[in-house]
Image (cartoon, rainbow, N blue to C red; front, side, top):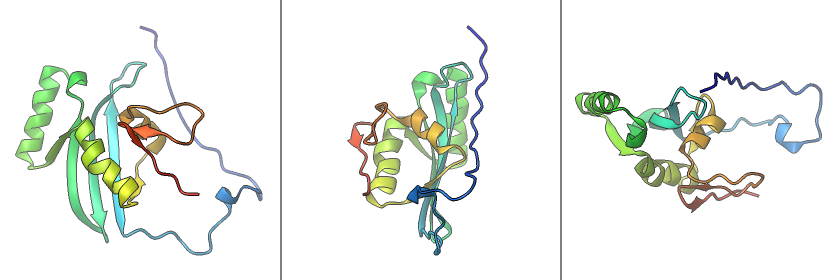
Length: 149
């Protein structure tokens, strides 16, 4: 196995731009409902999804929180520790597909909940089942993503 290092960063846009996406808004965006999630991955060059956590806030208060995982990516001891932690702390537990079907997709695409994370592009890619290259229409676990015009 070869050793690799991956680091992502953004660059600040300098000066005015003609791209409407980068124009400052006069009124700040406000969302009553927010889904915050993060994932952890394998530490090899594939960075496959292992586990994740999420919290759903409504008007600033936690409404639901949970953990999700892919059992095929966890060693038996990791799986036992993960399941034990969820039971001990009474945290809802989902398989990855359950999280996508029962939490992520309904919240983000049906309720239009704001999705927040430390590195959203990386985390979305970790949980996606199908993400075609060079297309704006993507699928997540077989569901077409609805886009606004």
